[in-house]
Image (cartoon, rainbow, N blue to C red; front, side):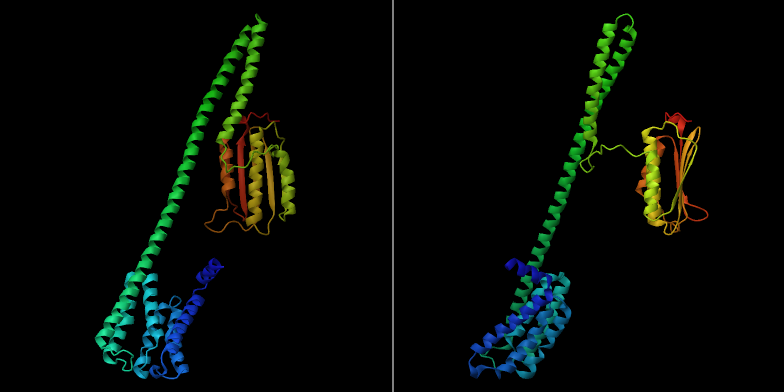
Length: 398
């Protein structure tokens, strides 16, 4: 219950300060009620009215601090004109001095303290209240007010310094935690690289052994079949061990942020037609055109072509607006080409539509010795074009 009330007060500062002003008025009301009737400044309703007037700036101490300071100084006319200074006036000046010192820098805090208490000292010297309970001189009042001002200011600055120190410690703890996390991640990455290097050496050793055994088996195959059979069996066992080490190597290189491997086959050329149909259903009219006959493409090349078409059509859906698109696949004797064009509004001047997906596709195409070109079309719209030489693919073109 208490924690919830504190949280509510932090969120609603104006309401919290208004409650504080009410509390200040209640304190003054208690003093007035406990004061003998002969020493009261006047009728009880009038005394409470002046008390409310002098406590009003407290409600604005954080929402509008400088107007609150000005209003508090204006209430000094009450004791000058009516010869009565409500207790709320002193409490208000103390609260405003503390607030300015606790929530503002040193220079505004000092300025506010001077603006508040110099007029108080002037009133005590030039127009002291005559009907006080204890007969004291102006010098005593000035010293007393000076002491109150210094204490309120000092307490406020102490709170300000503590709050700044706590915030600095909190920021330092956050930075330290972030650095610790970065160091831990770096240590994990370094350890993974070390393990990957070791596993790479193991795999390279197994492959070398397999190569040597294969050479020996081929040489003794005719004159000593048993020895060749033993060598081939060793190659088989070594191959299984190599596959196990490769799986471990991939597990080490895979980061925790990466999703688990999908065992489903990767899409290829056969998936382009369903992809085009899916984009049509999403609202973009797409035409698929195929020229030539595909040869025996590697899975990586077929996946690259699929990803290019997928990324280009996705960008067209996002950016082209009301448009149509054409996907053209060309299978030549020496190359494979894929082109995706649309008739949309094209990118804004100076803007680049290609995102991280096509940047990755550029790397894929470059891996197979091809090129990728993207950009606005002269007649409007956008064009994505990739060309891959089939001589470097291991494909058998038809």
